[in-house]
Amino acid sequence: MAQDITVIGTGYVGLVSAVGLSDFGNRVTGVDIDAEKIERLSRGEPVIYELGLEDYLQRNLESGRLTFSTDIRGSISRSDIVFIAVGTPESGDGSADMSFIHHAIEDISHGMNGFTVVVTKSTVPVGTNRWIAEELRKRAPEGKFAVVSNPEFLREGKAVQDFFHPDRLVIGYDTERPEGARARKLMEDVYRALYLIETPIVWCNLETAELIKYASNAFLATKITFINQMANLAEACGADIHAIAKTMGMDGRISPKFLHPGPGYGGSCFPKDTKAIVSTGEEFGVEMSVIREVIRANDAQKVRVAEKIENSLGELRGKTIAVLGLAFKAETDDIRESPAIRIVEHLLDGGAHVRTHDPEAMDNFKSLFGDRLSYHNDPFEAIEGSDCLVILTEWNEFRNLDLTKAKSLMAGNWIVDARNTLDREQAKELGFSYAGIGR
Ligand SMILES: NC(=O)c1ccc[n+]([C@@H]2O[C@H](COP(=O)([O-])OP(=O)(O)OC[C@H]3O[C@@H](n4cnc5c(N)ncnc54)[C@H](O)[C@@H]3O)[C@@H](O)[C@H]2O)c1
Image 1 (cartoon, rainbow, N blue to C red):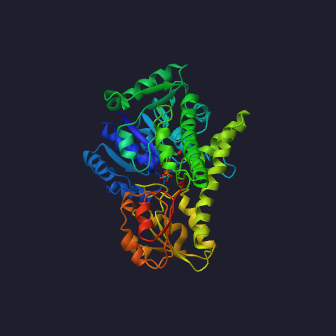
Image 2: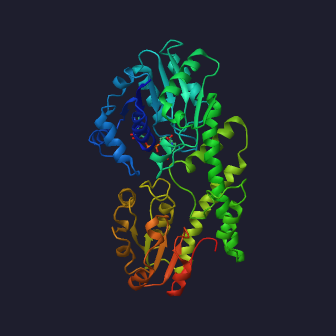
Image 3: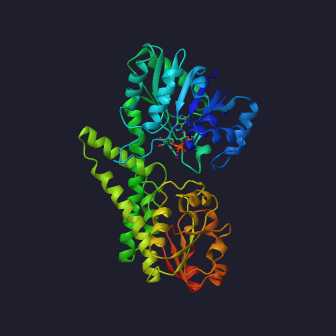
């Protein structure tokens, strides 16, 4: 049966969820405190870049099942299920900043009307959903609500595909209480479309669901950091990290995914979630030493790439550097915690002129760096006159970059390819000095 749903927060997770849940046949209102965002979304303008999102957004708006509003409490009062998809950024001490969640709970407790299932999609530390239940209990009688933890695993750049074809759904609920069982039934309805395509559904308690999310992200961050460190060793001793990673990946216990060396992980999740789980460990008196070291080594990797550029050129002052790729990974416009931020900062501090190009992320980068560097819609325009060409994001279009043309436009002959995307043999044949990662 179709449900009436409010999704609080229309960022990467909330917007894709609102669009996806309405496509499943539910009646969905996406709400946000950002009035401009809501206005643009109501016009069918996706406020973020995600492949396929625009079509789904417009189709579901036209069907009438999907609407957007700033009337948060009004929408909650008309809903059976309220998804929370607000941000949980890093706070000053590394723990998750819960202020957006607190605001959302305030709105839910004032707005809810009749039996309401409150579903947390935001990534929240262990214990948050129990705390939410306690907060709601202050206003609503026992039995009038249920709290569910439904962490999101979508990858930016593939968010739409991941929403409709997830590897698994994780649904934590209060297994001890009757409202928990009632909530489980409603969640089965919400996700019926995924159940029909045999998506594995993990039903568990609230704490388990919360920790599954952090454990998954911390493990992936560890895998990336492991291969980066191995790449640094390969580079030092004359081995080829690509052959190493490929062969490691042939072992079914390891798998080839997330074994690509690069400038360190970034994005809106891994950096903050690794720090948050270390903080949760401290709270429970459990030392998260592996993850603590991952955070340190990942930071060092970004600096290492910056220094690689500096060492190639001898010195940065007065040099012109073309940076291709600003997003934290390909297929997204998201620059949150992007390695490019740290690396470009280092280049500017050293006195270099930085010319940049990214297919989607330049506006976001501009809002951070302003006119301290230049932005070019065409990669060759960015490359023109540069002493060094740097690749920081693995956009497909950089893989086949015309190196002959690049060479003819550049003033110098250095390439620092932090994603190992270019054909290094061809680069060398053309007279480039090429530095990749781990080869
Ligand atoms: N981005 C990802 O790839 C991803 C993947 C999985 C999980 N997550 C988790 O999902 C959560 C959301 O991440 P995101 O990247 O979508 O964040 P985001 O910053 O893109 O979006 C958050 C949205 O919430 C809105 N908002 C904040 N407070 C609000 C309030 N009180 N009421 C209504 N709207 C409010 C903001 O205006 C913003 O539009 C985070 O906990 C994150 O860790 C993110």
